[in-house]
Image (cartoon, rainbow, N blue to C red):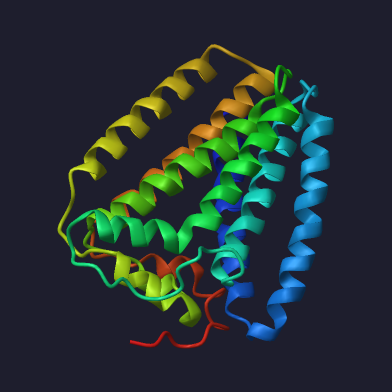
Length: 254
């Protein structure tokens, strides 16, 4: 159970947390302020718990830090998908498929969101700096790195762009995605990510208690992030996993 529980817990948090964000984002827009306010309160409470659990060396401390980091991340995802925290550019790409102008416009479309993630990540690092329980920093940092990798791969071009996950008010973001069979960054992302997974699991095998649980939780989350990357180059659609959460969403405009 020491090896089985962390992957199962990470899988549930990833699946259920993603579904809740999709569900809230699919509700009428006049509900967004209440969803953001409620999730904001949860995120603030999660930050307090991260600070308090920074020196908790028990197994529950690792699970708590992991869960709290995901709660904070969930608030940022909801703020982005509701359109509240995106970027100064809120229209389709006007640049050609190649060139620095297109990249500049893409950055402008998500700039505030990215800066918010960096600021929150630095805050979590500060709360756990030098502490015995760095799982919250590992978790949030991993989510940020892998989400940045996903965005870059979408920009460079993949087969399955996941546009069905974009709400109607963010459909314009799809114009910054390219459709290609694969790009040069994706294999590198999978290779580096797999190497980190192997390293984390290898370290976990030599540890016990909270140290083992923390590494297994982060490794499991990384495996799921790599799975999302693999889905980018396959014809499989991930919507079936969250069909229950997407029922409230309005049809996306073509």
